Image 1 (cartoon, rainbow, N blue to C red):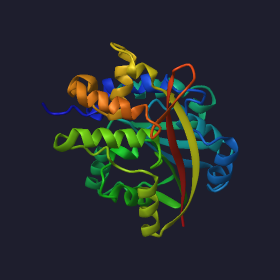
Image 2: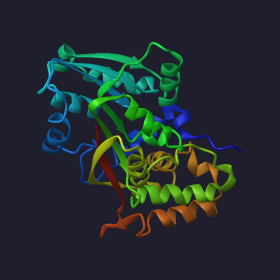
Image 3: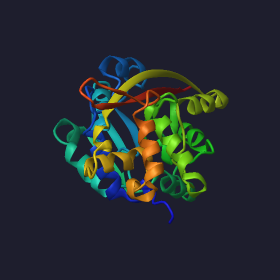
Image 4: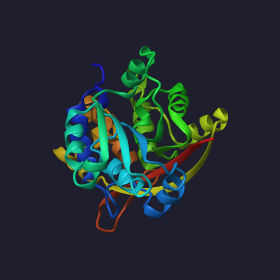
Length: 293
């Protein structure tokens, strides 16, 4: 039986993502670096002019995009916003967040498509030379392939002195370690692009490119994955689907393989076990803020 990769089933993706997001433990829900850091490394760097052009790749439900735009609007009067997001459900939520001051000062173009589809469509249109002052790629670079070309393409899309904001898992993240262990268990059955990037891979590509300066801001989140160990827990099954990026993961592999992976998930490599028995997975993620020279 072939594996069903989560990103190919947008509705199930968002169900599993919400289950994972709702399991965050003692930490904010959004991947935000905070007002002060964003002001210093993004807002203060952007040109002070009437309007800016922003691009969101895999913006999801748009909460972080809206936070970022609210901050940038302290420097400019208007933002022309482009959103590339394949999930219709996520786009509808995003649209509902664009209210009040944002709806008056932000004009948005919506593209319900993947990054690859967006790139292919632009490259087939000789007249599309639009560039952006700010590009946001929040935990979506994993889905853009493994050959490194997407980083160069995103830099190409930046205006001079533009800022590329990437949020991505660190190589030491319990999430990444568990995912890699799952990939090993898949063996030759696994043929997916989500192995993608981690911080070290992005930094290596940026150093080789030579057109940018960048800063790395380290961050931490925790996820309560206790439900993953509870028999017949629909929430736990959905969280495992997200962690492995396979639809109906618990039904896909043998009990022995599943048990081996669950044992690794609760091991010190990935998680800690609290005194009350809850199992907490550690996510180590970085914000990479890139400025085009």
